[in-house]
Length: 346
Image 1 (cartoon, rainbow, N blue to C red):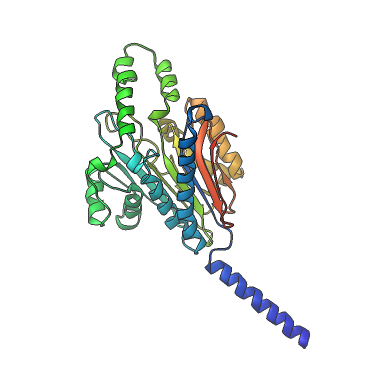
Image 2 (image 1 turned 90 degrees about the horizontal axis):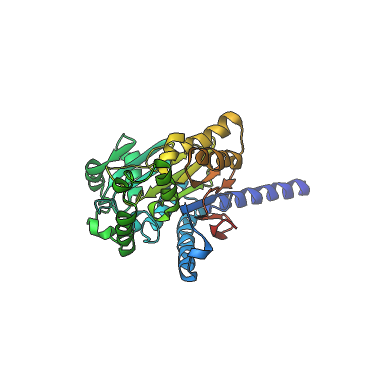
């Protein structure tokens, strides 16, 4: 009888511990982030800049970790994390966004909930401080998936989101980059001087053209979410929109498979529907997350002439961060609270 009582006591104790761990977020969860991929090498990075990027990535990870560690949702975590990156002028999103050819800032963002496949995105917005929050508002309050331009901005204002003057997004370094690109990489002038192949090669080697931020997460409830935000391509024209706000191209989440956020040359990610393709490879070909991600980033994208990378996490907490460029700002944090940030290939 005494033995039975001890067994019951042990069972109850373990059950209470398990419930406490669930409520405090101590069970398995993971958050993975990126701040863009490109020609990022130690040779062209100062120690001061490297330290700034690493500290910024860790700050973003910590913001998401606090939410996940307290039992919060993956959706809340990826939004909060991306907002930190949007507010940081080091990254091409929000405050650090690049300029269009006309000298404007046009922002794109997307978010997706793997629990119910709900998704929202915004494209070509100019006055929304944190487009990722605008994307979430579209998902939860509009009945639509994508809103663009003035309509998206009016909707964001109605929802009480932070609206700023376009001058808020101005940074001197991005403005100087635009002036250099207009002078050295003018599409209009170069079309008449060089062939398309040369233009492609020069665009690939011009790291100032591209950049994105993103986050993917698995929470203690087993739900996945993904969010991505960008200022797009520097010196872009004609209202160009990349892969970020296109669900399935640059952003995707499905509890049955994985959550993905992409970064790179958007035109190629759109044509290959990269994010959804990773999920499909897992679902229909039973590939692991790592193999599915590498199939798209290390094989399919380069075969078309594109470059970039992605971050992804699956329903078991496995994650992948493949990229085919010289570097990618990236990091991850698990339930143990240890943040890991990386920039280069090694």
